Amino acid sequence: MTDSSFRHGGLCNTGGLLSEALERLGVAKRVAEQRLLARWPEIAGVRIASVTRADRIANGKLFVSCKTSAWANELTMLKTDLLRKIRKLPGGGSVEDIRFSSIGYGRKVANTTGEQRDPVVQLSKDDEEFVAEVVALVNNPDLAERVRRAIIASRWRNAARLAESVNDTDWKG
Image (cartoon, rainbow, N blue to C red; front, side):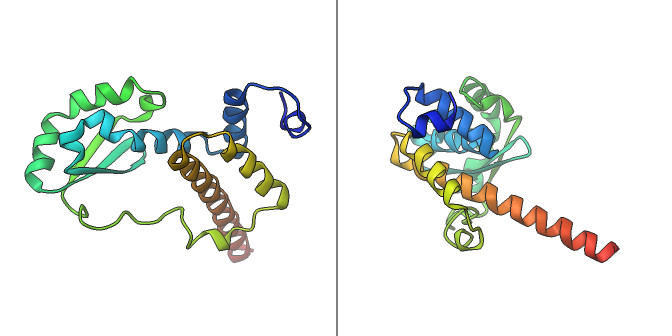
């Protein structure tokens, strides 16, 4: 079902609509990654989650900050089991490796999709409405915020790539 029938009160499968919307916006992979990060306590267990933080997924690697280097070393030995658990989850097949580090555990995670970049990206009114509709389909408030941020981050990256390509063209011209 298309989003136009959704906007006009048609019945639809919300899960299918959400998946279609995320694909159309080019953020489905990023949302799947955010879901995995949010599930880190479930994956690692309460004890490990209390001394670690799943920070990000990039290039098939899950980056996890650990409270101490001893924990990072210990978890390196448990990597195979953790990867097995991750790969059983939706979207987990894209994680090929886990990197554990004690560097940065005490710091807050860099805000790569938050308020500092929001004003840079000007979403069209249609995009804003579409994002609101997609986020409204998500029951979990934390996940809804992550979806919103993933969409905005995607828009920011696309705008940055476009700006780079324009600058490259201008420079070569």
